[in-house]
Length: 170
Image 1 (spheres, rainbow, N blue to C red):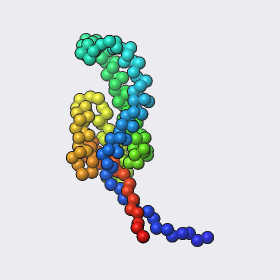
Image 2 (tube, one colour):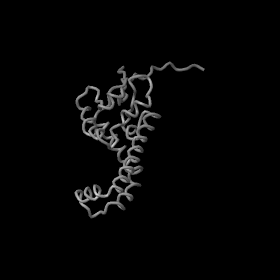
Image 3 (cartoon, one colour):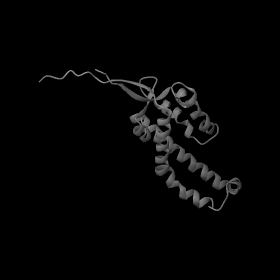
Image 4 (cartoon, one colour):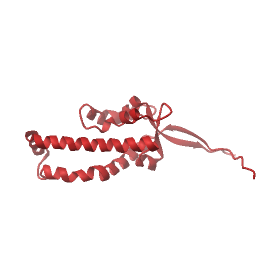
């Protein structure tokens, strides 16, 4: 039996567009909110009365150290779970669910994604100073780099890319 010698599709990878990255991130945040953050809501409702304004809640937290420590611990656990979501999905498949929908994926500047790269690129999810500064600084970098990389991606030597294909005209 003869095999057909068809030309292979010519493809290349390039930086993922910013709008695809933003949409993928919102999908991932919705999933994280549903799976990880939603189960913890009842804990916070039991600690801080719903009728409190932000300033009243802040005053309550600053005067009761037991509750503040508990909430800090819960927040830490939630951030670890969020980091694990991104770490596991990107390490094993190169994509999160949001990235899969947008057909974009994470690649390393070296051949293989390493654990330290996944951790560095997800430091933005740690809700402790100075990492909270990354909430603003990290995404802004996307708008000022040719490759649409966040600061954490530059530091981790990773990129989010999409695959493009050439169609031959005959």
